[in-house]
Length: 150
Image 1 (cartoon, rainbow, N blue to C red):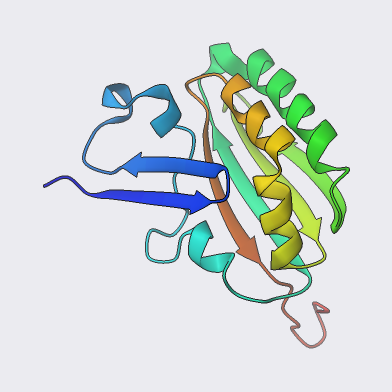
Image 2 (image 1 turned 45 degrees about the vertical axis):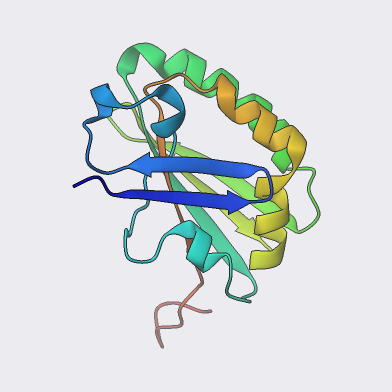
């Protein structure tokens, strides 16, 4: 049984084919995979919340690391100039794992949605190497008395 989900937020379009292996998928289908299939990014973007943190876990082939960093820099040059952007930090897994975690603080889900659908940013997505898969998810800070502030 073929399971497909489509996202259409303005020009931020992608499709995920959950029935195929990564090798069977077309490059444009490999770009995104939800961290939580039951509550993907497109549903999260429909909730009014502020401030929010966009976490994006990137997996890729080791050989594509330089290409990933080049594409990331080009996309970051656009996204960091968008209204509502607060800060960003990219982390790399230790050792031989070519896995990256991007942590972006935004004023609200509305500003995330506007930033991710900005035509200049969307145009940069095709530059990512075909092995790159991003798994975006939105979060908010949680207070834990004595340990964490919200």
